[in-house]
Length: 429
Image (cartoon, rainbow, N blue to C red):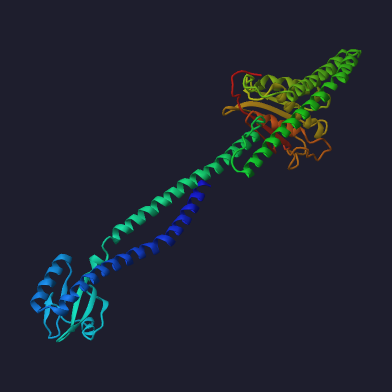
């Protein structure tokens, strides 16, 4: 923007200077020519009394003296044809002046000043002075250089002023852009200092107001989620008490474990809802091997009850990844829960966890009917579910710097591949 403003000012300045300096340069040349012509005319006029009254010898002496002083060729044509001074042939201007008409004309040697002298007894004499071309343009080149230098200085001053003005516009716009990028990166405390023209100040105030409003709305949303999650603790406690009162120890242990897992998920949701960014907190990290093994063991009980064969290929840990343990556990539960929810009983599935080129990938493949296109989109489901399971897994992968991939698995059904990047800090969550 600064370059465009400078280019605009430079173009306007150059056009303006051309409009003024070109006529001024022509005027300077005309003035120089007129000045030289006036001096030559004055010299010729000084010879008129001598040519009109003196004899030839006196006229010759006076002409030679004037030629020496002025440095210009001076000729006097007497009526009898005698030429005194510079010996030059009669020009048309001299012939016209012999008839009694004084004039100024142009010739190959320069400007020709011809004056008719009347009053002589033998006829009309003619005085001819030639102004050389270098005298006509004396001082013009220097004047043109001064004008050109003045034009360049004016253009540079205009560019300097334009750059100063452009800076007052560009700097506030750059600040607005920087703050908007910081807000996009979740730095909700970023604010811009209003500066520049009134329009930019108004935009800066609107951006600050928007950032404050977003911050308030996010705080309210987190508090509402935290309150809702906290309210779930009461029915969870009641469920745990009911499980403990069951007569079958295996059923009681299984239901109690499920209630404990649900309570951990609720606790993680509360902690995430109330989380605030803090540099001292450090990035999240967890051991994927331990978490996947724990969640597969939990779902293996249900798989046995529904007649599903489970193939496990879990690499030994630790396998650190850059995502919190609660989030990774929720992602694994979502992937395994989809197998039970969207495939008939008896459908086999395989779970594989292994390191791969600095990452850790988790594969969940089944022998079911497959997965429809677009299933990873949040809220999209073709089986009557909420459509949030795969989105939970996708966000967990993105938090670890990885990605979620859907494909047809080696068993003929759907395969979900979760790639997780390493933590940015050796400290684990």
